[in-house]
Length: 316
Image 1 (spheres, rainbow, N blue to C red):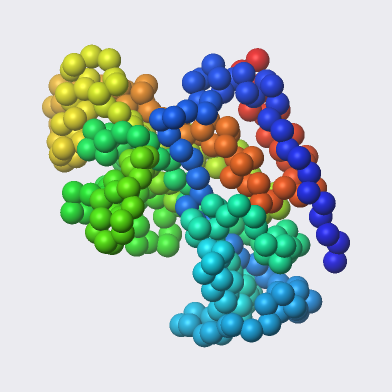
Image 2 (image 1 turned 45 degrees about the horizontal axis):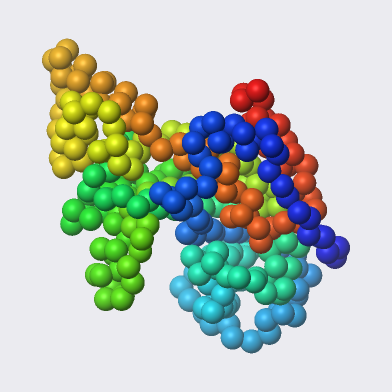
């Protein structure tokens, strides 16, 4: 089994200039991080032996897998040998990476080798965009009319069914400090207003050693989220959006109304949000090198180069 050598990946000046023009460079107003990544793989016996060579003991059994190894100190869980035999035709191993993993100063060598030398497929990727704004003064609307929109206890907004495994894209928008208080955690976040995109992929869409950044950006480009309504020009625009934030059914009634005037108001609200939306895809472009720093190995070089070319031509 070959060991892939780390490489240094640098952002091209062309891309950096483009992002600078779009006001997407490093900002004190937001943070961008992975919250969760879920992986699956169909491993050979030899590849399983690699995992066993690093982690011989500590496994337990749960309802879905015969062997589960939770490395709590590193924020990663490895799952081997599913109980459901039909799964084996597609995958026989899974990994779940939690927020703690993405805040490690150093990823252990054993975990790096497991991640980089097995053909893992990313099936779920949660990207968190955190802002220093008031959750109740931000707004998000459905980017597709058939999606569900729900709000729980006035503190979390979901777009797309958060309980369904079939939905490709889901959104969770919430106040992080409210969440911490409910968990009795003595934690206060400066960047408290979270817009979390929960992207799901088919196994052939997103290889961990060949991340399809363009697909991620295509998904992010659809989201309609304004982090600070009060920063929008025009009192009419601000008041309408605050009304939508307070009562989303107000917007839905306008959108579904048979009256021409109502539909025009709904269309104007949507247009204001589109014009002032957070450019999540450009924020991701700025940060993806840092986000994926634990995967800086050789065969990513060509992909990153292609990604830069594809996304800087528009700016030239």
